[in-house]
Amino acid sequence: MNSFDGYREIVQQGLLELQKDIQPPSLKEQINYFLSLGGKRLRPSLLLAGCDLFNGDIDKALKPALGIELFHNFTLMHDDVMDAAPLRRSKETVHQKWDESTAILAGDAMYASAIALVARVNSRILPEIINLFCTTSIEVCEGQQLDMLFEKKENIYMDDYLEMIELKTAVLLACALKMGALIGGADEKDTDQLYQFGKNLGVAFQLQDDILDVYGNKNKFGKQVGGDIKSGKKTFLLIKAIELGDDSIKHLILKKNKTDSDINKIISIYDKLNIKKLATMEMEKCYTNALLNLYNLKNVNKYYLNQLKEFAQGMQVRES
Ligand code: IPE
Ligand code: IPE
Ligand code: MG
Ligand code: MG
Ligand code: MG
Image (cartoon, rainbow, N blue to C red; front, side, top):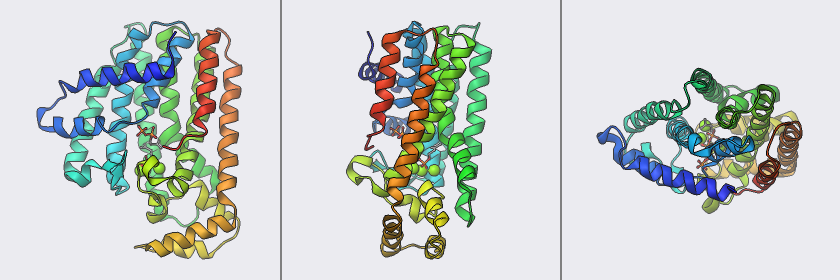
């Protein structure tokens, strides 16, 4: 029987194999640097788990799983440029260590390699897999663009925020699970249900990322804590604080070069309004919705279903 630790190990080994022959040679150093920084390998693990749920052959799912992880790493490399982030997985980001052009090109090359890997499936399901992957890629771009646009806007509704995180983050988790289901031979109803599970899981995951961005432990989180506040990101925490009627925060968040003292003032407003608790409750609600989707799955392997439930439950207490 396979476990989530096992999936991660299989993915790690697969990535190491890939890293020997990264293309193009002129960007190999940067791509290998980024892929060697670690990461939870969540999405490829979910893809393999999705395949196991339907008693599929996970050997057939490995190449697409590696493709999904490469795609994820490409989005992170470009995201770090957009967010002007100095740290990723506790190390310098690529644009910081080299420069922006290098980060853009290394990301592009990873994206192209990702497509080639995702396409390594049975020709019977290839059109659906490619269609799913392209649709997801475009949705991620849309989500990222909304994320950037919202930085400049003063008032963002919670529903718009939720739509934005569904696009930038949740659809990729859903896509990974759906690919696993398709490779594993699931029927349409179960495939759709697993996709919905991935979306709810992904929304919960991004809410948690927003909470950790303010309240995480820097050494464990591996990213700059307070980065979202610094760049004026419209997160659940900020939107909630504004909703609860604290206008002083609006003035602070719009300041161009925020000092540590500005950031601390914003965090003390969050604390006063009990924002961490409210965000955590919303996150838990989304995890619960995700788990409910799992109960609707019909033709699945019970052992792997149970394992996926436990894994999703465990994700609620992650620190990185
Ligand atoms: C980071 O994803 C980007 C978000 C969607 C929050 P992960 O938290 O999965 O990053 P790694 O791959 O484990 O570093
Ligand atoms: C990540 O959003 C979404 C994508 C990379 C597509 P964030 O900007 O919150 O991710 P982190 O916090 O930098 O990992
Ligand atoms: Mg970012
Ligand atoms: Mg971002
Ligand atoms: Mg974040």
